[in-house]
Length: 115
Image (cartoon, rainbow, N blue to C red; front, side, top):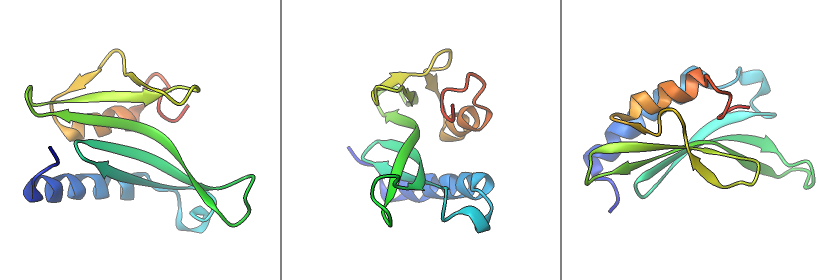
C-alpha cells in the first residue's frame, strides 16, 4: 500500500531538507547531483551524473534505499552492492523513523552508501 497523502507530504518535506543539505555546490550540479524517488513504500536516494557512453544523457546511480513496513511500524535499510542488488544494511538494518535512515546515509560509517 502506498503512503497516504499526509505521510507523503511529511516524508517529502524531510527528504527535501536532506537533499538540500547534501547536494553538491550549484556550479557542479551538471556533473553530479543528488535526488530521491518515492516508490510505493520505499524511498531511493540516488546521484545523477552524465552518462559516459551516451553524451547528453543523464544516469541515476542508487545510493541508499529504505522501505517502510507498516505492519511493524519500522523502516528497513538497504545498500546496493556492485552486483546492483539491494542488501540489508548491517549493523542497523531497521530504524524507527525516516530521519534515522537519513542520518545513517549521511554518516556512512561503513562506506556502504557513497563508497
